[in-house]
Length: 447
Image 1 (cartoon, rainbow, N blue to C red):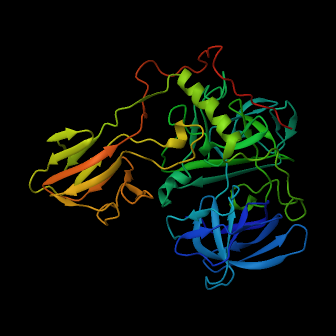
Image 2 (image 1 turned 90 degrees about the vertical axis):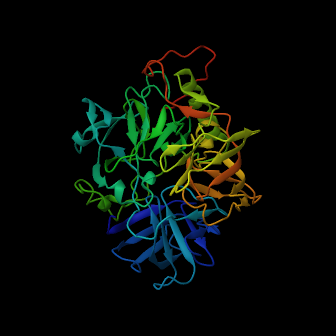
Image 3 (image 1 turned 120 degrees about the vertical axis):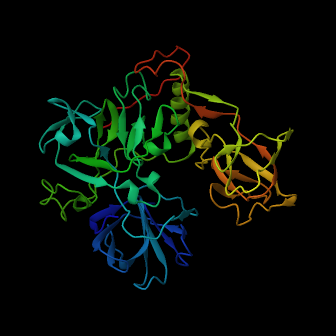
C-alpha cells in the first residue's frame, strides 16, 4: 500500500466528485449528488482521519473532509467528521454516474493512484521513438496532430499489484499491435486500466476497450507506471497510438521524479481536457463495435461450449446423466472439495452495447445436494460465485465455483453463445489486412 496520498492543488472536474447524504453504509458509496463545478483538493493523508480541504474553483465554497479507510486505485472516500460520521464524499479519477453506487472490496487505506504508461512504452519525439523511462525534461514530444511540444514533467511509480486486494484494478492493459487500426499500435502497448486513448472526439479508458483477445489485461505482481506532462492535455503517440498525456491536477508528489514541476504547483490554473470521456452510451458502444469487429478480422474467435466440469478433489467427474442441460453427478465418498468449473466471459468485452463487466461462467439454478434443494443465496455458495440474480432463482459462477460437498449433486445450467478461446492457428499478424467491408475506426489528431 502506498502512503502518503498527496493532494497538492489536485483539481476534480464536474462529475469527478460526489456526495452520499447518509454517509457510507458498509463498503458501498451512493452517488446522491455530483459536484456541479470543479473543486481543488489539498492535504496529505498518512492515516484514516487526516484532513483534506475542498475548495471550489470559483471560490464560492470551501470545506474540510476526512479520509476514511475506503479507497481503490481510482477512488477515495472522505467523511464530514474525522470519526467517520456524517455525510460522505468520494473523489474519482474518472467521471461518476449520479444515482449509481461505488463498492469497495477492501478496507485498507493507500490504494489511490493516477493513470500512466508502463515502463518500456515508446513515445514519439523529435529525436525518434524513445522509451518512456529514457525521456528527458525538454524533449519535444510529437502529438497526434503533428505538433512538437516540450515535455515539462516526468513522474514514475512502482505499483505492487500483489499488495492490492483487487489487483485487477492496477494490472496493465495490453493493446496488441494492430488492434486499433492497420499498424496501430505498431507494437504491443501497455497502459494502466484508466489511461485514456483518443478516438474521434472522445477519450476512452483502456479498461473499457478490453475484448479478451486483441486487448486484454495482464496479471502482474508489480508494474512500473510513468506520467508524461506537456503544457496542455494532448494526444501523445505511444507505440504509434494516440494516448493521453498527463493532465496537471496536482498529483506530482505522488510519483518519484519531482524535477520540472516545483515552480508550477499552486499557481497554475486547471488544465482543460483535450476531449470528453466516453464511459458509457452510444459513443463508447460505437468505438467498441469497431474494435470487436477488427479483433474478429485478426483471428479472435469464440466457442459455444462452456467446457463445464465438476471436479472433486482435483478429479474431473463424469456426469451420471445429462437431460436438457440438467446435470447429475455421483460424488466419490470422502470428497473434501467440490468445484464447478467452466470457461468464463465478460459480456462487455465482446458485445458492444453491453456494459456488464462481471466475469460470468455458467448460470446455475435448481441446485440439489443429496436430494435437498440448495437456495441460490445459501452461504455455502460463496467462493467463485456472482451475486444472486434479481429473480432469486439463478446465479452465475465466475468460472471456478465451490459447491456444497455431497454424494449426489444435480443442477440446471445455462450459458453464453460464445466464450473466448486462444487462437489455435498462426499468431495474430501485426498489420493483418482488413477486408473492404470491415469497419474502420478513425483516430483523430487532437491538439
